[in-house]
Amino acid sequence: MIKNKFTITITDINGSRHFYLSQIIKKIALYIVVFVLLILVSSGFYIRYLDVKLAQISEKREGLLQKSKELELVNTQMQKSIEEKTQQYAAIEDKIASFEMALGLESENNLSIHTRLENLELTNEQQVQILSQIPNGWPIANKGVTGKFGWRDHPLLNRREFHPGIDLRAEIGTPVYAPADGVIEFSGYSDNGYGYNVILLHNFGFKSVYAHLMRKEVVKAGQFITKGELIGYSGNTGLSTGPHLHYEVRFINKALEPLYFLDLQRKNINKFFNQERRIPWQSLIKAISTQRQVQAQKQQ
Image: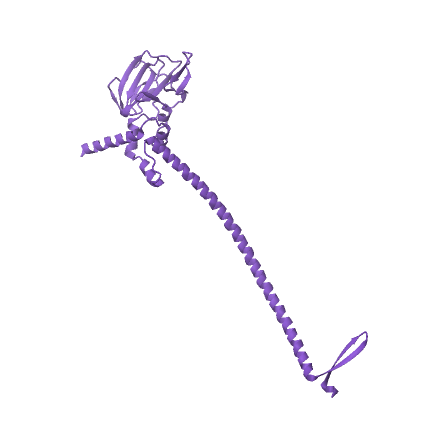
């Protein structure tokens, strides 16, 4: 019977005790041990699997955090770009409104910027007409400006007075050319300090004045002149401290800043309208357009 028994001995300080189990119990115990071992092994593999998954999740989390930072950076850049575009848009609207005011147009904020810009555009024909009929460009070779437009202390009269034009540096005998089409209103000597001078009457109420010229008759009153035609020579006549050309631009006898007209070209004609706002440009453009239409009808 002993061989069919399974003995378990437990020893402690009090001695040894013997327990005898049958083979069935022995097998049950063995199965339990094997089961426990399987559980432990399976748990080990499962823990390893969880570690791998955790590492993958951590890696994905780091990737998502990096993408989140990148998106935050992109969002910050987009916000900055939107703010810059908003400022640019506001600046463009201000310029359009300023130009509309200069041309005498009503500001229509309900229209798109594209439409408002189209309303402001001048055709090539209109630009050519404007630049042929109002003073533009230098009447002499550009050697610089020696006297500015506006209030100043007169160099000879020792008093403060308004200088209605600008003084252009020029040697005696420098050719002076018409800055636009027109008719000679006056050509001769004046006792008002201008000496020998020429007044050129242009279309739409514009005049240009050339003072301190040489005593040399080149044009006569009533003579029609085209842009670029010779009208005289610079000199030192009248109340002058030295050879130069005194040049004025007037609109219905109102003195204007000649520098704006000296620099006027097709490429900066819009800027010019904003600089000189004392002239109703919109009505002038309308008059030029009407004139052009009349000419076209006559040619048909």
